Length: 444
Image (cartoon, rainbow, N blue to C red):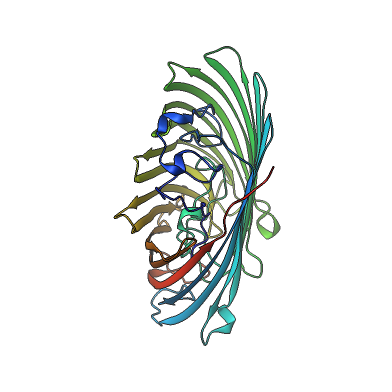
């Protein structure tokens, strides 16, 4: 079932940016009415298409029910067992706007009931919180993403659009390796401040802290924190350049507390923004990793140099929106590997197929491997893919019916099975459902 943030249903065009207000664009107004995104190209927050029309303070609740069939609810390779599943969830989007600040909350909570498998029954919660302040030269944003889900968020059925963090890739803990049915709690907090030096240049300082926990399982908990300092220069109203330095620290509480990763990176960044149509960000540079792992022999301290990339594209036509992102970095290993070198690609397409039929497609691929392979032993590697497709049609003024299908696959070369999946996993989930959106309640 879907956990994605739901927008108030537009009367003309359902393909809209994530809810930021009750906007003119929702009613088909030209993109030229949008207000530009002034965010820095070197920050931890992604570039956007801007804000649209006259924004208002509001609260929008919605509810969802679906009935699906899951071919592998235990998430174990080689298992095939069609299990009917009932899914219920509620969503609330709140936005409050003041003269120089704005607050937003997007919360989804619900549960899944598996027929004949009560031990798999689960609940889930996802929330995204933002508080921003804007002054003449200063801007400050405080953000927090928190999720409690019964398995890996990467391709979690119905959660595809929220499976990736809303921050720049690499800011939140890595969850791109599928595990067995095991609860995962993640929380990432970001603070970002920018100061305009003049009309063309600015400085940005951002800090983050994230944690990943696996209650009741033997998976590897991790903490992640860092800081990034950047200089931004606007070539023209659309194009920006930037250079940044980042420090990322990863620690492992509990039995693995002696392990740690300190990484330093320097990146060059380019951004291009066409308000209401395009937001492109490309950054790359060297990453120096200092790894301390007592299990390594004969030397427990290892330094290596690799490269880091964080890129994203957001493109919108009147009836279609496309999102793509790619990241390459060294980070914590999603609870399975102590340290992982990760390549991650995410994409989504949302479009209006006919006057009353809408479609969306979310897909992702991740490759995780140990950057310090032991001599003579196979290097553990996990290749993970997911696809999530959906068709929907309005049933009434505030109700929408939908068909959904999800597929997950993971191939791993590990020799022993444990909480990580060995062999090949192929999981199919399909079903039908209905959503009901209440009319947005304006806050004066």
